[in-house]
Length: 307
Ligand SMILES: [Zn+2]
Figure (cartoon, rainbow, N blue to C red):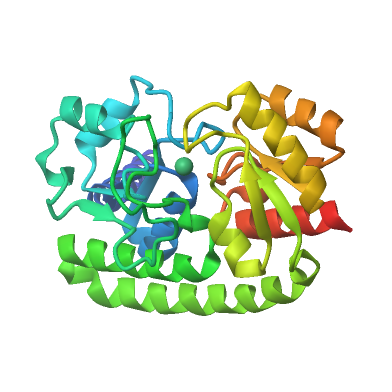
């Protein structure tokens, strides 16, 4: 009896040890991906599935161009196999400094682990000349293309290509997952196009110019932005003009996100425009923790706001 007991115990420990070993192996083999924004992290997860472990640096409520740097970002970037980012200088104000201290040559610009999702995206608001003289944070055109679900299919393709470049042994899995995800997106895009019918022709104002891609997709008309230029706070004159413009054009919605509600509320009280808070990074609440859920929540909220 005693012998049996010790045998059972030793068997138990052998099984336990091999389970630990197995999960350790699986973990060790997982690709370590770091994405700048939650929506990108989710698309990476959809393409990489169980082969990747993905973390997002931003949580989704930060200023689109000013993610506060936390000490935990450095070790995450240091260990990463791949870095998935928006590009077009979207992360220019916070990411390059982090990459410098993270000392991980695999994920530096131009290296295989640097997955720039803007490749092949048709960019809106491309400037005639690149000029940062006044602090413009959109020097390469508008980088907020993730809000267009059709362009998100190119993002998913870029991520699959980037993962394959680094881990060619998993190409088949990435391609299979990509195909399934694009089919799922296509399905949702069809639904969103129907759902967004009431948005067609709706005139709106945004705080930071981050809604042009979504507006373009669903037929909304941008009348103006609270910011004087991308990333530059308004002057009193600009606000007076904006209020006049809202009244003249009968703009119905003012969309803001990470910014202080003070100015949107002031503009609303002077013009009668309806204020809607929507974040342009996704992931900040349970309804927005995947890319598809985030776009769905965004479209639904906008439709409710005009009905
Ligand atoms: Zn921006």
